[in-house]
Length: 301
Length: 280
Image (cartoon, each protein chain N blue to C red):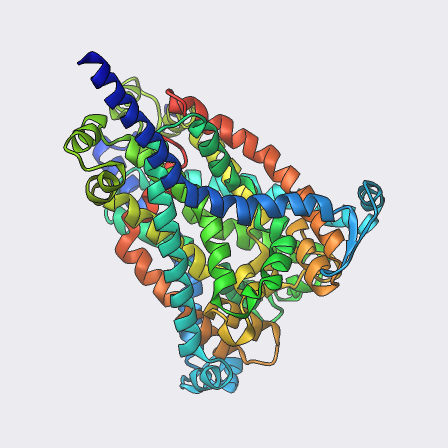
């Protein structure tokens, strides 16, 4: 009787195992074939000269010659400069979320409006930004209106100013996502805590900085990771539409450099190499993210 | 803020009132900043190039130029087909694997799950060159297939994470009861777990729809020019630098409409999906 039950339960366990493997197989196969294998290939081909058909082995020295290439460092510098936009892409949404959290009249409507850019393609955003920053664009008209006409310039014509224009557009586009993150975070806070602080006589600013903000650390970190990942790997469309990477290498970031090198100059090997460097940078950022997700999981997988 | 002895303190009610109105005014200003691009597009889409330069008068010239230079209807259809096919694949593989990782753990399933989810960290640009060469060799870049597969693979890690998280919330007893009733694991998944996970399925669908609809890079490289999505078509039209601004604004507007509509209807699901990564 007991033996029969045990053999039944072990049969059940075997079936369960088989079902588990069977059901998880398609996802695993898809991810391995289309994400896992290419990353391995990219590592290999990064050390070759490759035109898509024939690959000539170069070896690790391919990396050495990249690290002595001034253009590569110029591109990486653009990535570093884009990081300067990150505090704005986090600070502004933080303030907006705090204001929304006051639940003023019509706050639901405002919330929908502020989140809207999340649904919009970077291509469309870039289309507008191109006209906004151009010499005859909206920005210069506004400046002229306030008597700042002589300072009117085409921001997209200068290397530094074009990167600044790109960064401003990026900050605008991140407002929706990051406000969403912070608003979610604020909803998790215990309202009696804020009430208690108010009773204790703390001002609104004190409550925000001393009570709410410290409790939102995890959400700020999360927004930080999302923002850095976006800055380094989601701006392709924006750059493609707004500047095409120019003027010069003014707005070429590493991700755009991969595209230019690979698909415009057909240097697949070098393009793959830049992709690997991007991957390493992203993996470092991703490790931070993983550490953010894991502790809250509790039970682990 | 120390109270100035000479200043008459405002009554607390009045102060609350002033604060509320100031707040409302700030909200309006931010709303204008967020909405202005859409107003600009809508305003200038209905102009001819001359009317655009003068910034006065409206016409449909921009629209007719757009339709003359871009197969808008067929590209919208391309976008729809690519989205639908990729989302279908993502849903099939992420619901089944999410269920397996959450409820049918086998030896090593934790590691496999972590491996799948960690693929989230792979930026598309890092793999795009070998990916392109592989799919081109297989002849999959001559049709929708290549782009659909790439979109499906890119969406699967997060969708799997989301579905597994959702299924972990379903009680084990429910699953075991179904097994004891003789449903078997596969049918328990299809008949019990799957219907329960409709909210998570909605979240994945909305999130992926917006992501795929809005994407440029994959659409640009993996689809033949005749089968481009609207987003890729628009970006190439803009890169040509010969199309007038009103026509481009019209194109921007029409390409954004489906994503905006989906966003407005399913806002709640989108917010849930985007913030779930925090693993609250």
